[in-house]
Length: 440
Image (cartoon, rainbow, N blue to C red; front, side, top):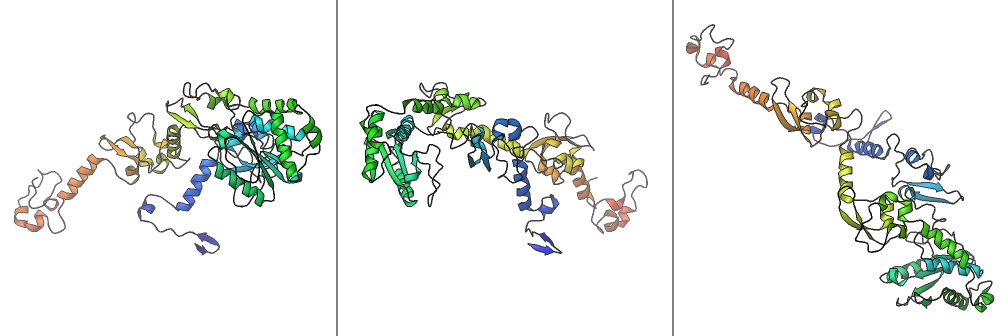
């Protein structure tokens, strides 16, 4: 970096062709490309395409950035505030497709986990249904399945199906929470193995009252006692069935079909068994089969991945290539090389125009010489490097090769013979312009 009278210049080491080809500083170029790619076109911003989500854009914590300055599926992290006043920081893409406020959402929560949380809350165990993720050392914050913040107690429900290969991950999560000053009770469905510490083992079909009783008893062993412990254990029925039913319904009512209709239309018609899009939550991490409506490619992906904006990779590569190939205003081949663009063939490149390509594009195009009307094909970048009509070039090359060097013409080498040159029957050609052994 060189400082000249207060102006900083970045010195770039590169070949001379960089100057001849109008290529500038690569670092500034990358910055311009990044800004161009992240800036939405007219009527394509988040604020214009999804006003409902834009209403949750935090009014104070995003500096001068607004919902009209970003694309709907940008991965940029910004601040949000839901109608209930919850604030959170998240990338734009996931909220824009239906996975909103983490405190209002029960994404990833199983029915048994939801019902257990409501039973423990009914026993006055201090459950916080909206508790934020817990900061821990060395990894991302942990969202406890059930959090009792007054006691710094987390209860994790480990279903046998989803945790059968996650023993080490469960153990690391427990250690991270303990390191952050929280106690952990793990409710593990059989046949999951023991991790040690506070645990309750149940079957997947254990009655909810029996499950809640077992958790309360295990917690009481270590001094964590619910306010209505005795009354709850003496009861034969669940206390929070109605509240739990409402919570479960709220969780299930948000499906791929309702939240992501465009993605639901790519649900594979035969390869997902009897499961349908209206039965699957958009935050599910289970992989399902999809079928691209454009190219009919089939692939497996989790709904949470689809919700984040990931679709058919083959179509994505094509769209990405097309977007990168599109020149910015004032930087097309036609703008920077108008003389060469004048030779763009009038009919053989339809619908492509010289204003649609970059000067150093690798596309092949047809050209028509303005001098001899010869048609030929050439890559756009070669025209930017001053390569013209091959027929005219060959003709000019022939003329140059036939022209003698100074002192090597017929007149110079054989003056006696040159004296016999006819004075008018050779048009404008003279003995000075031909080589001694020319075949003319």
